[in-house]
Image (cartoon, rainbow, N blue to C red; front, side):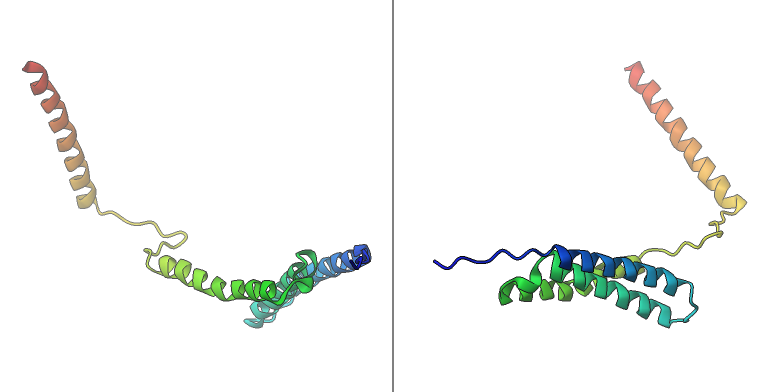
Length: 133
């Protein structure tokens, strides 16, 4: 039986950790630079690279069998599918805007109050009639 030599990955982990910290600084710095629509692409690219580093090194996917790597990549294909369902749900909801209040006319408010009072009075009179029996 061949013995496998244990390799310490501490130096690699510290290097990746420092790279992740540097990428956080780059992300924050990029947020202060006006790049227009390109800002989103830059931020997502940095985030994707950080994700790759975490998955490859800290989750040990780089040292796994090809089948494990395939399943890790397949997760990336499912992500847009899940997001499409979330966004489809979001797009079907009624829009509300900050600072805009749904206005109700005085006539509508009067009708709402009248309906509420008639319903309330009907419930009380029904309870009274039920007690009389």
